[in-house]
Length: 81
Image (cartoon, helix red, strand yellow):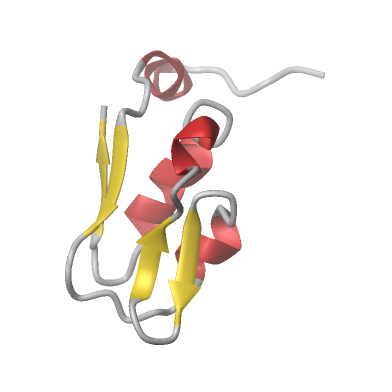
């Protein structure tokens, strides 16, 4: 089975994620948790939080984490390479 090709896929694989954070303003829409439940948790009182053990999933879920950040309707998910 062939995987994704192209420059963007290469860039995503090369640029490792160091940190994921959530800025103020989360509307608790659950999109991030639906995409990457290993990394994000939406709670009723705090909105979205990054799970304590999230870093162990940064390599295997990098593309999904970046997708969650790109799709966030209020743009509060920040990814540091």
